[in-house]
Image 1 (cartoon, rainbow, N blue to C red):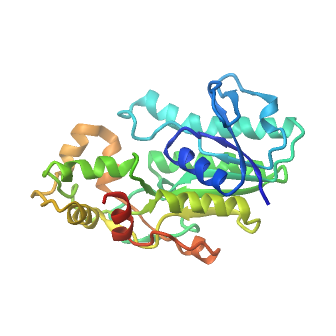
Image 2 (cartoon, rainbow, N blue to C red):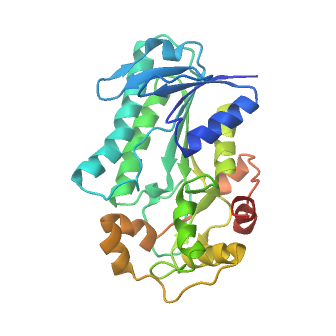
Length: 301
């Protein structure tokens, strides 16, 4: 049955593609945005700082997909940036919960973006599942706080599914563009040790998991949005070079250089996380791009 779906953060990489796929499947989609926009998709205004949401935004909506949040890698981290990263996620989720409590609505499902940063970043080979404990670094604490706010929505009788997203690979933008650029310029090289795991996912599979969470009433709680086969940074860089038919440049980029360039944020790429997709597969999701070579052949060729 077609659903009426309200999406926050719809102008981003994932939100744009997800909107397209949902409409293709016959769902009715509207957006929650910081400004009114013209176009075929109804857009309603919200302002998190002023705690305002257009009351008409919830009309006939049965599903909310919450993707809004400041980009983690858009700026060099400092106190102000880190505050924005956290509050853009927690405060926006709080606001949605408050408005759903205060207004009559027909919302039955709330699907919230989350991140594998929940587990922290390490050089160990530990395989993280949804039952693993959160890490203790900055991003882990951000994601933990984000999920706590999302869980509050379940207290008002709404089903909540949280998708802990890995590194999203897309031909349009995102992480792959930055990772592949040095290889394209013939200066590609693994970062730091190269042994750090990169838990990735093709954007269409990530959108597919969100759509499954919308349609499958049995999906509750956290699910890792990653492909079945994580790879190391060295393996990913090598696969990019193979597909693009470029050589790799040695030696590896030293960790201290990365820290000089991007600061504290470098810990994300110097370390990594090996994350399991077993739970979402057990829920019945079948990946279109389970292997990196298949994903790259679609994206890079």
